[in-house]
Image (cartoon, rainbow, N blue to C red; front, side, top):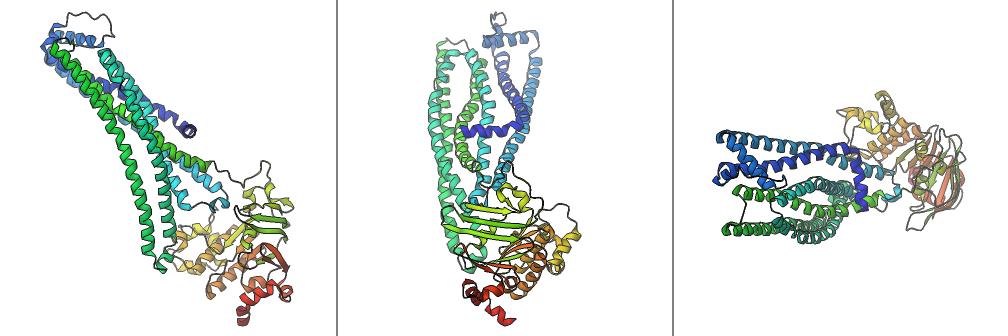
Length: 611
């Protein structure tokens, strides 16, 4: 219920549309009743001789609805020609049904804005929250699960909420209005009918609880399917290279079959609600027919044929509302299961946020400093231990070390992708946690080994995050990144769509676009994470030239295995097992028989031979 209270908050922006829609719902209910009421005069006043004798009957109370209607219409027929009455009744029937359907459409017209608005707002909040969560959150979550929640779970929540809203505003007024009419016509019979309602409620409640459990399982299973799709399609090149198509097909088929079995169970359980309601309704109808039939046969009934048919018609009109009101509880249960998953995500608090009194970093002036910094990921051992390092403005710092030494983790602390577990990281002498995250990252450009590009134009990828950038500036950055020549050869140049993650480009071309993006941003601090490690020789030369232009005049922190970058660095920091093993220039470190010398012999000897 608490989750539903939170969901109802999403209704607030659409209260006007909701009220308008439900005004038309009430009008639809009224005209539904009037449309049924038209049966009464047809049966009694036009085709029954019995009604000709009731014009003199006195009606003492308007609450004696049956007699009031019979006498009222009998007097009308007595005063006017029967054919004229027939014409008016036909016109009234047409107008009544026309208005009923018009109001029904207008209810849907205004309700559609409520439905889609709620769906849009929940998805927006969830997506915004995804982007606010730190990188550490994504190390434990599968992308497919997150995609499934924002698409499938939110859709279920919307469907459930709208079913509840529609039912609450439509079905109770219908049931109450029609019940009053039934009670006024025959209160004893109607009372017998409504004594059967608790039986229906108990059965539907049992079905609803079972549906909630199955719905939770189905939502988890569709998350697994989405995750499998995302992983397989994202690695389709590897799947084909290793001939694993059949394996992946079987893996997907197992997930799909499991989901199929769950959905079959859900639909079968959900389908129970309607026949259960209808069977109880038929039992009720049988009771009505038997009691009426007995009275008519015994001659003790005061019901005219029109009144009898009207009573049945009202009851039949009320039946769908009773069924939908019962099914609403099942929708509520399914929505509860989905809302638990969505709100669990929304309740996940980002652990990297701005402090209330955080300052802006308006300009990078002097240095970045690590003081006794240690770090570990959740459920892992210590990755960095007691790091003490000063990076002065304008210097190029190279970070080297064996795989798993903590190089990437060290540089990830600078833009505050993660926070140190202990110690302090300072920029210009200010603790990084005391500065706003956006102002820190605005001062940094990041180029990684895994180039991140978007399925958009080349121009938009280079100008990512920057509005109203003249094309000349984009071309200038591309030229500096050695990218303009290959872009210019493309049929549509800078307007070329590069595909998912830049799949239409080579590795070197993608890397040069990411460098152009960093150049256009023109950041004072640059972070390069093995930006040339996976390129062929020609691409490496072009990218390395672009990197040298990019680093010129900037404070650069470089994770690299390439000789030129390391040799030209103002300081090389050697990491080993999460600790700084040694520091110095290339010439200083190469003289020692330590880790750097061993790395140099392993990684750079071939390049030195070629020089």
